[in-house]
Length: 497
Image (cartoon, helix red, strand yellow):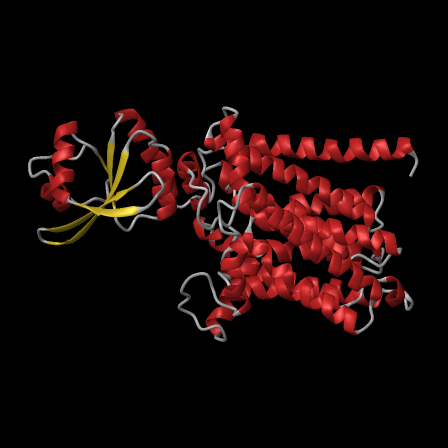
């Protein structure tokens, strides 16, 4: 490549990463609701214990590094989030170019990735830790499914792909599903697919070197998370108890709801939508999207040249990758959008293939319709996040509650035990020097009290001692939904503040 052209490419990629990262940083705020895991991480990171099994070991190492530089935990989380989004945008730009797109087509697929992805927007605004592993994961997916090249470049691709997978897995252990490359490498050897076998084998070697090299450099202070979760994944077990049977209609429904959440309405469960918009987003739009997506996939397959098979990656590899990214959300927490992010990256790679076919004969109109639906979904997510529009009554009350606690400057706050745990985490985050308690009225003269620790762990405490502490502090903030019988039980003479 011409040196000046290479320099322009580097400047462009760095510029995309910087601009996208800065815009993301400007959008992030802890005044809005964050992910529950994010709140917990902000609390425990200052007392982080490096021993044991850590499923996000590299993420926490990066966060601790920022804290040692004087960055607060919440700003450290936001820095990693904005940096991850910037790196993802830069990686997507590079992947689109490497797969043959130029000019406006390249910009189009990047715009679709960032703007026509409601689930990605929600993950970003809630500062989800999953965002950190998306850039190396996209790099891995591109390299492992790319068309065969020369032997020397195949070796390089394998080494880089394995290293990218190791980094992704150190950031989030769920990337272990892509260790399917091991069996694929053996299959490629058996079927004498030399180019793919070479790429896959070197990816496995590179993965092991980088993954275990990280733990070796850290002195093996923690057990590799892979060792704990690989057998669980291989046996198709959920991380926790799942009340629904694996092969049940309810599981299929959850799977469909999760897909709808990732690609159209990720935070609809938190919204009070007008009936026309609710019906449109949750019923009619998904049906339209399924139909449009089906037509576009059919077009992509139909438009492949007859000699394409000789110039494309061995079909088994992309099919296996696609299969595991689709099976993962079905088997593990189907309703959560963060379980769909790997499939979302595969969908992005498919979209690049679709654009390369130069859609015409009305197919481009159908593609625009699909993109428009998803942009509208992103718009609804942003509107809800940055305003009171579509907010449920409980979320509006939460904002008022935070203001009241600050106004009264209370060191202790009481809330009903059935309060939304994401709301509880948000309140605890905004009471760094206070104590949050949950009280449950079981009946006459029977109240159960729990304290919410700084790392959001709930532990039962003596209600008598809680009442004594309230008396000593001269009162507490008492949520309106805490019944008068509970207050009288704790402080017979107390009145609500």
